[in-house]
Amino acid sequence: MTTTGTAIFYDGITSNRREVAVEIASDAIEVRGPGGCLKARWHFADIAPLTTQSGVLRVGLANAKTTARLEIHDQALATALLARANPADRTGLTDRATRLKVVGVSLAAIAALIGGAVWGVPVLADRIAPHLPVAVEMRLGAAIDMQVRQMLATSARGKPFECGAGDSPRAAAARAAFAKLVAALEGAAELPLPLHALVVRRSDVNAITLPGGRIYVFDGLLTKAVSVDEVAGVLGHEIGHVDHHDGTKSVLEAAGLSLLFGMLLGDFTGGGAVVIGARTVLQTAYSRSAEAAADEFGARLMYKVGGDPRALGAILLRISGKAVAPHFLLDHPQAQERADAIARIGRPSQTRALLTPPEWEALKSICTEG
Image 1 (cartoon, rainbow, N blue to C red):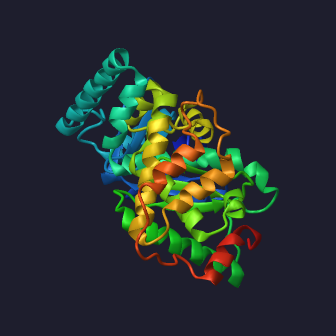
Image 2: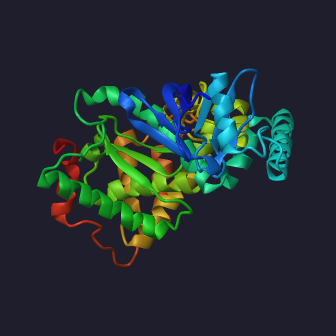
């Protein structure tokens, strides 16, 4: 009986389709890439046959957190694997728990379709995003992150896209300063998921939030900022978008029902949905109410950690000017209007320095140190 052959491997994180070599060992199936590097080793007891199409066996891990899967077109190899993996059940869908799961997923997909027809995708995304399991939102964020990096990294010009990645003491000091600032804000925000914040090599005066707690601060923003409180205020604003799931909502809305159904079926990394979602993160302007809510969250977070909440309004005014945003741009509150709303929150009776002067200088130079 054949114990070696080739198959198609999907890692469950990206949409990449990889041809791999497969070997059925004594207690597991081994998946190897070019050069014989081991990509996966799945024990027979953990393998669950998935739905099949004519002539193709698809298998994955029964209790895995990712949707990694293997497609085997070689009938002899598929027969050998099924004989070793689970001789009592070769259909892949006969156990009661799996049947119930399939029924549940089917009903959820039907409900999503009906919901899309009745309320429209935007309302459906708005309702679904806050209730996504943390693990699902983080997996979505990881998939979007890979696409966003590819879209943004062209401006790095041969240098690392992520700033502060060097081995020098100055690079280490810059990383430590940024980590200290993020940790102070994250600890006060009490988010349901961990933050993953980076400074990236982009000259735009901007910061963006991806699904799953991922925040990119552009180097151009650090260049424009005149105080650590301004950077902290922008970070607090972006943390507000994380807390309100704004990035996830916009991605779900833009990618449409294809991404919603993919999430229900446990695989949202394929096709063009993730590419659309990544473009949405880079191009979408949040609604007026979403930006105002993030402003308030960031300002109150600054108040909580002892920083000056008004610093967020100050950098908004310096970036935008007092009257450059006309009233017909309803998805962007005017900078002065936003600054006034932030100022009404007030400031602590005693503020504290979120970074020392040397730490602030190190952070400002993070993209020149690696």
